[in-house]
Length: 113
Length: 112
Image 1 (spheres, rainbow over the protein chains, first blue to last red):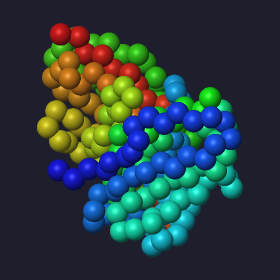
Image 2 (image 1 turned 120 degrees about the horizontal axis):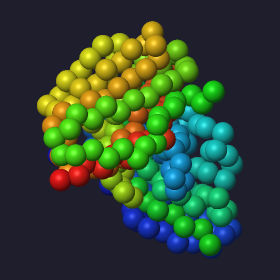
Image 3 (image 1 turned 180 degrees about the vertical axis):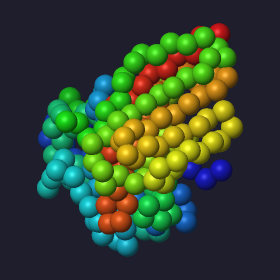
Image 4 (image 1 turned 30 degrees about the vertical axis):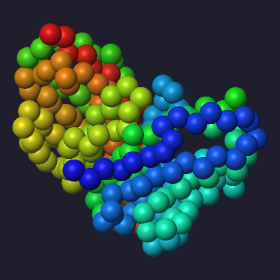
């Protein structure tokens, strides 16, 4: 069964450093998402992406964040200058249609020291 | 008022019990309702997906949506120890707004 994959599974970085989180969505999906989950809190929407552009973004997704689909398979989330409060699990999700179910990857645990 | 409220539990039941998990919401624009299962430090796994009001059954799982009461439920019949996980409800408006809004999750333990 096709699945969303994410790398790395765990990333440790120093405050102020740039990180890139990578995702390979399910191959025929057209809609891509990033969510995050701070330990003990809700899963929160960050951004959605369709047709090579951002469709919607949350208040969390400020200028420090960017997303890209550099090729036909990868979908990346970049945090330019990490803060301590960026420490969280980051989940990539994909879906075939706009209101279709979203399938989540296993997540990348980001630890900012 | 929080947009989606879910009792975090924890909920502990014996094997074979019927489990009832619930969420309430305040946004009447929500039309799509999902239940995800999440094991510790893993990604959410889709269990059930329903549109608008009504019931949907899949094996031991039944999802119910009551839009008039802004209340959704997930029932698990004949619960198994492998059902032990955190259950997340999630919702979206559809149309041009399809981001998922999640509840905080209910931690369920099924004891053998």
